[in-house]
Image (cartoon, rainbow, N blue to C red; front, side, top):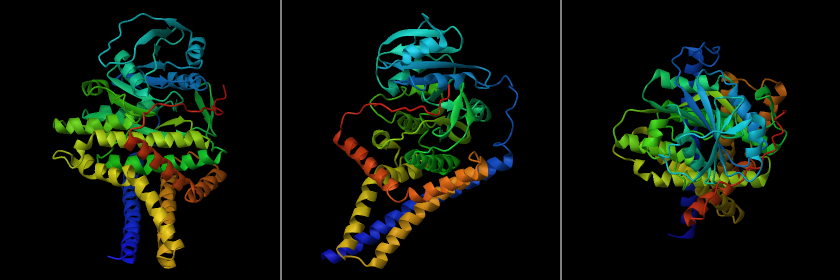
Length: 468
């Protein structure tokens, strides 16, 4: 077979891959639209918070903190003001090198609080346990640095309640978020985990722990991430959840049955994607045991978190995410096409493997080959134009669908200029930003492949949205 035949086959395979990937995402979008319509018709999204029934299960909110002095106080204040009848907050200071612990001591009047510590899940040594003199339901675990997963395991050991909610230290929760995210546990005793929507706090204002103003970031990178999060949560995870195929719950906001997580060994500390790995492992082990269970995503419990505003921090985040995805799938490959795999093993896992795990390699290679073929006149300009049109038009369509779901369900960005800026971001992100993301993700895939040592890493916080 001559080189021209190879070029001909390659161009059609590349075009087929990109079209298949985007058609898969469009199908998820249709599933999300159907699911969102059911939410709206049932009135779930717009009902006022109901009075406490006394049946709500107690929840332990676990907050791993590593160098979070800029945002930790405001985040905890928002959590302390949740409209939920029975919860505790356990902050795990993971050997922070900044003044995180000192800020906690000063803002919440911490005092040493000796108590029994159940070390069922092995963690790095705990140096001390504190309790707030102002808020009886706030405790702080001070431990040696072991990473986020190790911190969450320490929090699970210290937790007193049957459900635990893992959140990031820079997270701001809406007051009714806990009521909404716990509801599936009341509706169905098969539910073992639920996840909520994460929004970008850059451009918003938080005062005294309350989200007082919703806005958009002025930073272009953060604005692109607003669109990304709408796309990822409102049609990605909602679509998978509608067919019982959800493989990830964001570490920024998710609730789990504590006994189930303890039973399977807690979070793995040898991965940087501990949130996804836990969910994939739950699917694999519970299906192997033949147990009935459900893992649910809800679009209406919302938390707000800070997005990176500089290229270096964003690059490191995306590299870490891709590596975490690779570790999560590779360590639970037994779920793939397994006899009891169901939708997670026969639909979600293959999709994630082809279009998310290996996606960066195939996407970057596809872009590179098509451009080289065109430059060296190996393909017609018509074929190149079809490829570019299909790639960018699908990208815009998918992002617009996420924005449409936001507008018909929540409509949080009410000002006309907000909508115009979001439409601007939907279009512009396809010309450079998404390709740059693919390159970063490819680096993450490469680092996983060669076994580069992983670490939690620093997240540069500006906390400009924290007013006091």
